[in-house]
Image 1 (tube, rainbow over the protein chains, first blue to last red):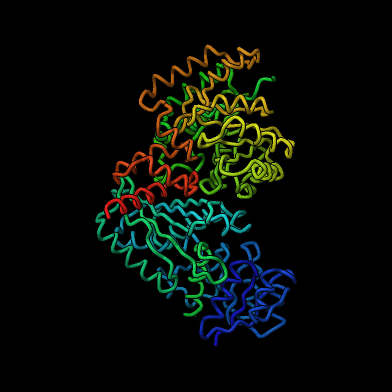
Image 2 (image 1 turned 45 degrees about the vertical axis):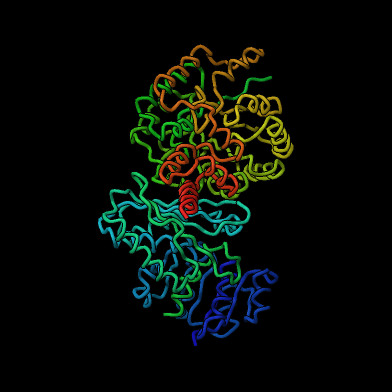
Length: 282
Length: 336
C-alpha cells in the first residue's frame, strides 16, 4: 500500500483525493490545507480523509508518514515543501509550475521519471498538447517549430491560473522544447466565459512544409492519443490533422472524468490523470 | 466639449486588414506623417498585440518593424508609442522587449469578463514605470454593470485609464451610453472607447461615448482596421471641428494620411459588406473575417453559417482555431 499525502485543498487537491481514493493500492494518510474551514478540507473530511489545516507541518507531524506527497500549492511554496520532503525521505509529485524536479508527461517519458525524488507535471496545457507534439515529432523528426493554443473555460480557471499566465506560457514552452527537442515552441492560452462552459480544447499548429506525410502523421497522432486514453479517457481529436495552405492544424478536446469538477474542466482532469498514472507506477 | 485624446490604432488594428503585412518602410512614412499632423499617441504591432505573431493568427511579415519603432521613439520625444498586450499571447519577456524598444504606453487587454487575467501584467508594467491602460475587449458580450466591475478591478491593479472595445462592432449608441454611465459611476480614472464599423455605427457610437463622458477615442486613418474597419480618424476630427471642438490636429494632413492608406492598400480597404453586418449582428470578432472566408472556401460551406455558429457558441478573439473546427464540423454534416 502506497501512503499518499495531498498538500493544497483547492480544485486540484480535491479532485486528486477522489482519484486516489478510487484507486487500489493507494491510501490517503493526510489531506492538508491552510484554513480550518475551507471548502476543500470540509470536502475531504466528508470523504473520510485525515485532514490538517497546518499545511506541510501538519502532514509531517500529525499523522502517518506518507511515501509520496502531491504538492498542489503554488510554485512559490514548492521549494520549501520540497526541502522538507527531502529531509524526511518523501517523494514528491509536483502539480505547480515550479519545475524543480524532472518534467513528466506519461506518454513521453514516464519510465525515465520513476527514480526521481521530485516529478513535475508541467501544466494542464502541457499535458494536453505534449502527446500531439510527440506524435508529430515522431512522424516528422526534423520539425523545428510548433505552436500550441489551448482554450479553457473561465469556470475552470482559478485565481492561481489567472495570476500565472506568463509563467504558464514560458514553462510550457520550455518543457515541450526540451522534452521533445523542438527548437522553437510557441504557447498561447485563451480563457473563455462562454456558457455552457466549453470542454478544454488544445490545437497544435505547424508549418505545412514540415509535414512529410499527412497520413503517417495522422496515424501517429491517433496512436499516441489512444495511449493517452489509458490514463485520461476523455482525450479525443476534435479536428483531424488538416492542411490549410501554409499551416497544418490538429485539435484535441479533453473531457474531464467528472470526479470533483464538472466534465468541462478537462484541463484540470488531464494533469491529475497524468499525476495518478505516475503515482501508480512509482 | 473638451477635445478628446485621439489614440491612433491604424498601424496595429490595420495589421488585421493586410494580414500583418505592414513594412518597416511604411511604418516610418506613416509615423512621420501622423506626428506632423499633430497625433501624439500611435499604437504599433501585430493586430493581436505583443506575442500575436503566430501560425494561429498570422505572422508579422517584416521583422524590421521594431527598429523603426525604436528610431521614432527616440526622434520624437513627445510622441507616445503604444502596444496592445493580451495576457495569454504576450509574456513578461515581450513586455521587457517592448520597453527596451521605447514603448511608452502599454494597453493590457483581456476579454471583457476576465479582468483578473490582467492583474500581474498591469503590475509588471507599472513597476517598469510606464503608462498602463486597462482594456476590456468584446464589450458587447456582457452587461454594463459587469463591465463596470471588471473596469474597477483594472483600476485597482493600477491602470491609469480604462478603454472598452466594441471588437465586433455590435454595440448601439444607447448601449454605449449605458456602459459609459455604469463604468464612470464606479471608476475614478478616465475612460476611452474603441469602435468598429460592422453596423455602420462607429461614428455614432464614438460620438455617444464622448457625449456620455469618455475622454479618449481610438481611431484609424481611413478607418483602416479589422473586418469592416474602425472609426475613421479624419471623419471624427471633421465632425468635432464643425461642432466647434478644436482638436489641435491638422485636418488637411489627416485627410492626406487617409489618402496614403488608400493608395498603399487598395486591396484591403475596409468596407461594410453583408458579412460585416452578419458579424456585427451576431457579435463575432472583426478580426476573424479573412479566416472565416478562408475556412468557408476550404471546407465549401457558407460563411454566413459559420458566423451564426461562432456567434451562438460565444467564440471570442483568440479562438481562431474554432473557425476551422466549426467549418469542418459543418462540412461533415453537409456531406452525410
